[in-house]
Length: 119
Image 1 (cartoon, helix red, strand yellow):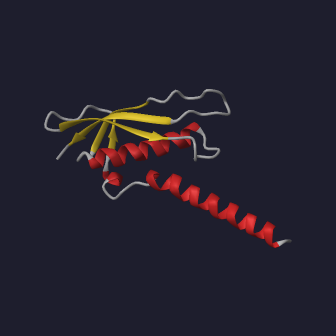
Image 2: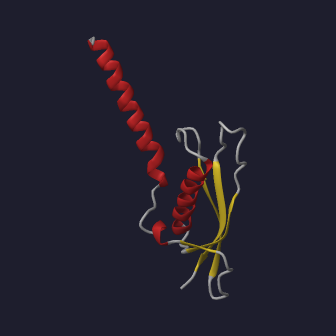
Image 3: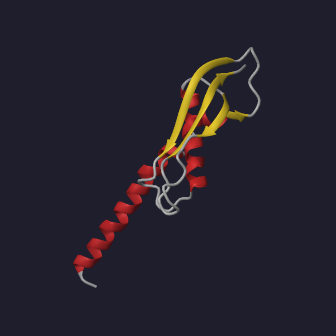
């Protein structure tokens, strides 16, 4: 194998690893984000509504992920944003993405919900 081929393969692998690291790091729960809970029933009146938040997972660097995998990343992004707002509960979370343009081209995954701080 020539030096040029080895160098090309090394650069290609390094670039792929770097892009993967850059694309997935924001979709890991933060310490505070991991404590945020999704609930199905409206929080008690003693909880404070902080506002709406949106979690998003773009498809550009996602590779061959399914919509379910993308929406999980969007949910993690939503949890992190809720925590950054001071919230610990997300109510009425919904998949607000456009689903699929076609079976092969998923759109960005978007999840929205109401953020509350409950004691």
